[in-house]
Length: 539
Ligand code: ACM
Image 1 (cartoon, helix red, strand yellow):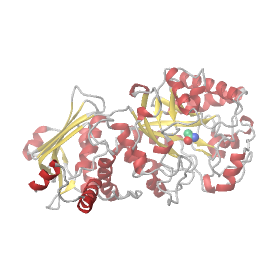
Image 2: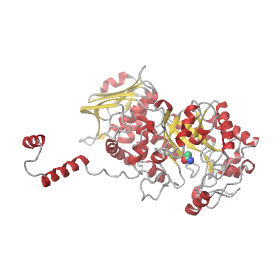
Image 3: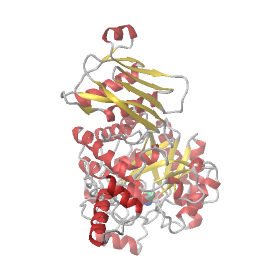
Image 4: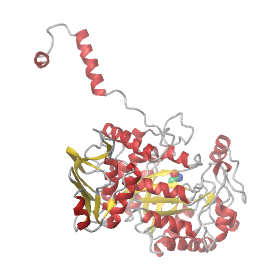
């Protein structure tokens, strides 16, 4: 039986037998993790397990799921043992228990009696990378709190632990700030395609940060600077340069609509690289101190992302000056700056700045050289190769949603078939903080659109981020089979996932059948090798 377990654990072995779920089963031990398991099992199966932290209460029942914090083990790791008579889950930390709970739910399957079973199994697990993320662009299209909450639940179920929120771009500013209220007031009214806009209040943002933390997900806020700032100009025209209308901006307007960016008017098209803050004006750095200072204070996590991509209208000298100052401001706030890979070409960014690589799996145009700049500066890399895990790329050529600039449509196989240490030559596991899938939302306006693009490819990103490169079942054929089983869980949860192409007929069987018939057709009698003759005579 194929188990729909994604990401696949470090080790998993099954035995004969199963643990049958029933309302008599009692959850004991760690109260927080026990109630997570009870909620997840109820949602998946409709079975309401009892939580009895006191072991005495459980003894009467006899059949328990025992959840326990242990002193030792890898951070975020867990051990799960399922026997027909009981289940034991252990971890050194709360995150590990949470991840063990997610695995437990993925293991559930219907039994012949119409109930639910866990297969008898031994699992030992821990993540490969510390940073396992997804980025959601709420700037091109705004998505309200309940949509983001559901996304947090869903990425946490795949053991991702970072939600990167792209909070500002040319098309909108999405976080209300006390220090600069005009940003949300004037800069958030519209979205791409002329759709309605919106923004998070400070309270919304604080709620999302807490909601995520309860699911072991850290929020990384991004304010994209110094480009991607047309919306800033709606509130503070004195802080931005006039738009630079290059041939590519004009061509994008001709292809996708949205008009030519105009100062003082909301921008609803797809063009990039035309806007810039004024680099040589101190008012810009007062603005950064206010905005980044307020967001840092609202964000308990250690990372603050300042963009830095596609500043095509900014000279190299101005770009370097700006990135040096912006990363120093972030470091001065006690946060670690994160910037897209272009910033790695700047000699004097704050030491330890983390680079987010968004080039291709096989780098072009020196993007890998840029990325290595962060390592030289004592920083690490987050890998988001655009032709693998940019979830806004069309999954296939027929898709009405999504874009194609990253080497055309990205299949589930392409999303799965890359190895983090083989992207940037010289960057080993030690230099790689983690892996992040990104969902840009120029073409995505609804939650259904998000689901169609995120699923199933987010599962590929999750396995690459979590599972060891040489771990068990880390092959495309094995992943494809598991993800097809997991898709039943997604469907039952009401997720409108994109299509999973059905596997071709089993290649081995087909090839064997073909070569058999070829042999039958063309091999003259008596020409078989001794080994083939022996096999033939044995059957
Ligand atoms: C990016 O895709 N411009 C980071």
